[in-house]
Image (tube, rainbow, N blue to C red):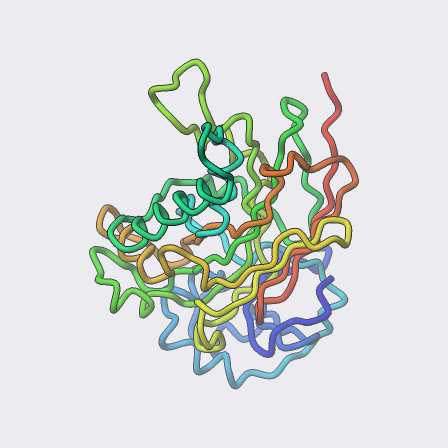
Length: 322
């Protein structure tokens, strides 16, 4: 369990007999069902209930006292979203690395020259392009300390630690300048990807198949906490770090995003309405397994940390081959 829980956060916990929404401060928790009358919500109190009335309940939550030890509980994913929006190719260095892994270096050009060309393309995309967004399944969400099963149909499962924004106020056709007003808070996700299922060899003209590549059970470990936006000084200045068996693999600032959180929310809202509790994933930085060919194996342990949001610990278990 993560020893560095934030000073103030929401979580979903289990005491072995029931699951409930909790307020978390450091290593102490409060079952919000016990104060439902005080915060004016029905029992059981859900994270979605809180987010739908976030402006009113947040000041109340900030003044409540903790009553139990966190160590006595199992930590679950902090949100149960209706929609999961995912952002592809949104970190400059990550995209350059992936492009280089798939490119053939033509005669007369050095690797550095080709890399510079790809970098220029990314800069142009950031200046004049739009985010690449697709949908994930809420059923793929797992807990922040759960084991994840690696499906036997592939041996190319990859890690992608990401910052996720949690929507608090419905957003439809909002501008970039007002987009962050619709964010209740932030959490950590590890957006696992089965690399050899992303591209359809039988239908190359279709392109990517994110449904098959990303939505296996537990392939979106989420949490441990939902940290209120007010407690995150700048979502575009957070450190994202993932270690694999103790070795640092990803270590990057959110400053490396091509499109920031506000741009992603604004773009998504031009097509559909974001709802309270929805997740907006912001892409993964460089350091994935794809460029080096090192993919997840049975027994691997991933520890993912983002500044101020805590840490998640995920152990990989290989599915038995049929």
